[in-house]
Amino acid sequence: MNHRILKDLENAKILYDSLRLSEVYPLLKRFYDSLPFRYVPEHGEYFGMFVRTLYELGKESELQFYALELEKIAKKNQDPVVRYHTVYAMTELGKYPPNYAIKEVEEIIRVAEDETLRLKAKFLLAHLYDKFDHSADEMITLINHIEKPVDPALARFWETWQIKKLRFQKKFNEAIELIQRLSLDPSFQKDWYTFFNLKVYLCGTYLDMKEMEKAEEALNEIKKMVDEKPLKTCLMQFERQESRLWSAQTLSPINLKVEDNRTTISCGQRSFVLEEKNAAEKILSLMLKNGFVDKEMIIQAVYHRAYQSEKDDKLVYYHIYGVRDILNQVGLPRTVVESKDAGYQLKTQVILQEQL
Image 1 (cartoon, one colour):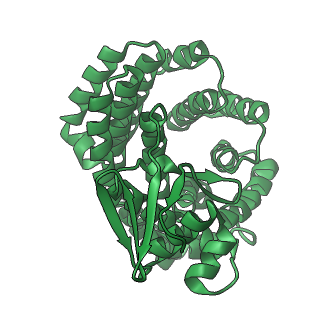
Image 2 (spheres, helix red, strand yellow):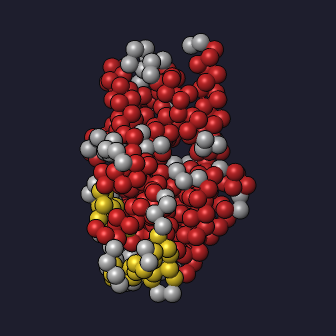
Image 3 (cartoon, rainbow, N blue to C red):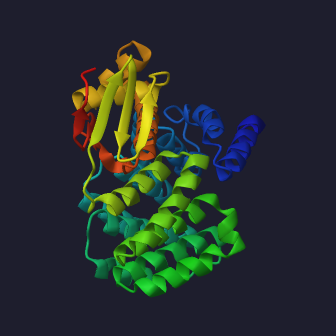
């Protein structure tokens, strides 16, 4: 492998650790574009990083293309490293049935000689048990048989699984104590994404305990971190916790008033003037009129062109985040806008004080 490629991979690793994924993407894409023509071991080694980058940037069709290419290589050479990354990518894309994915990972654990790979595969198996709703006992038994790794990054990952285990066992106070202790650990504080996950686990555990005020405080901390780094998986986790927090509450209606060409929405004592100067306000206006908007309507309203899935999915996702921000400003939970089918549904009533 030539010096330039090796330098690109080294730079990609540094940028990836800083979560500068838009800069990681061109470096790794240039490297993986050679995958269909010539496979080298580094293609397997760096694929986990590439999977995460593509997924966070909303490039799922590209991810599927490269994963299928790697799958061909995995079937040909049976390299456990390649098989591991193939299973991980294809499972996240929803392309592998649960039983097949689990059997593949179990086989990787059996044949892998590298202890680090075997350890990662065990964590992946635990993830699959959780993802595919296997019994908590299976997941707990597996985690109990994994000793704390020496590698610092894997050791932090192991600690987060201890939190999950305690929550599955309904040992919520112990889970809170562990989260609070780890949150004070400098190694966790320097690892942005793992520290973010601690906040998510804290919020989730308080929700498990029905401690709603504490859960809301934790959710506000998550929101600050999401605003700092609006990664796709972070946004999804934030919205999942917010949905849990607000699901039991009755949604107030939105009052819509048009007066002197001025459109105002309000909920209780809070109000917001819709001037339609940005994408979020244009989409919200559509949503107030129709209740439901699909992605085609969104792209047409904002950019006056046809919707293109590969190009526009992430764009739509972030504009909807802005819509939820506006509704949150008038006192509604962000979950008042629900992802549904190929678009978004407004879940509360709109009371028209005057027609648009």
